[in-house]
Length: 151
Image 1 (cartoon, rainbow, N blue to C red):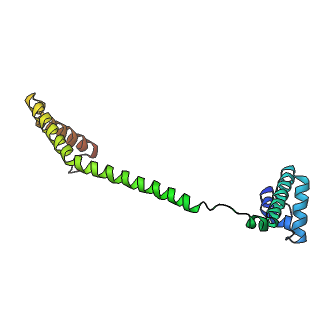
Image 2 (cartoon, rainbow, N blue to C red; image 1 turned 60 degrees about the horizontal axis):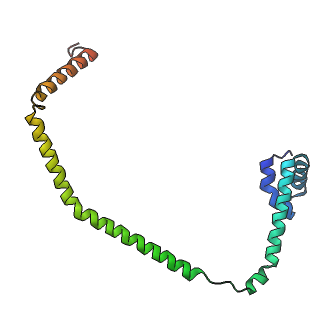
Image 3 (cartoon, rainbow, N blue to C red; image 1 turned 180 degrees about the horizontal axis):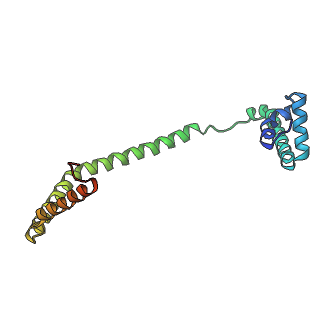
């Protein structure tokens, strides 16, 4: 059975631990012998496996060592950051609420003034005629596109 690199790398941990069937182990070994990349991958995997075994054997020594408990300090810092974020969010919301009604009246006032000025300069004087003219052009082009209604 011919193996590809992806399959070999997938089954590599089982190959190192000797958990594969003899046929599968032979197929992987033949591929590794012919593929430099997979051979390097196998060496790295064996080194990592040796590190894990060494760490497991040193686990008893690590448990005897006294490591400082950082949990309480980290959680207190997270609480401070979260409280500060909440206070900033509340202040920003309150500031928007106070200024929002005044801002809307200012916008309405500016819109009314601009409308009045535009009316004084006669901008809207021929607006109705322009809309009627555009409407006539549109209806004649639609009629030309679809033909007369009676046919």
